[in-house]
Length: 123
Image 1: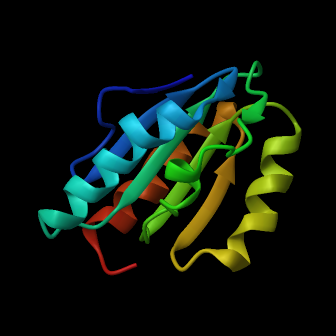
Image 2 (image 1 turned 180 degrees about the vertical axis):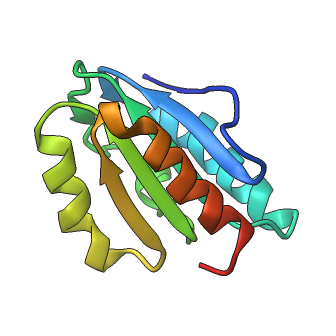
Image 3 (image 1 turned 135 degrees about the vertical axis):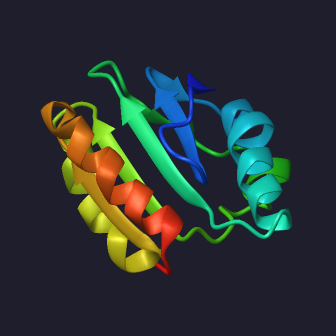
C-alpha cells in the first residue's frame, strides 16, 4: 500500500508505504504525483516513510506498468521500514540520477531536513 500523506515541506511529495506496493499504487499514485510536479516546473523530491510491515514491490507483470519507468527524480529519502530497506536504498543509489538517502525512523526529523533542503536548492 502506498498513500500520500501531508507534505512535510513545500515541493516535497510525501508518501507512506506499508505491506506490498502494488502496480496500481505505482500507476495511480506515484507516477501522477511525479509527473504533475515535473509539468509544473518543480523538482521531484520524494519523502517515503515506511513501517516495519513493508514487504517490497509487487513484481511488474503488466506490460502497461513495465513500459512506464520511474520518471527522473531530484532527490529521494526513505525513512524507516524493515532492516533490509537501508541496504536496498544504498544499492539503488548509483542507478538513480538524484540524491538518495535512508534514515532510521528515530531520525525522521533529520530526513525531513535533508529532503527539505534539496527541494529548495539545486540538487
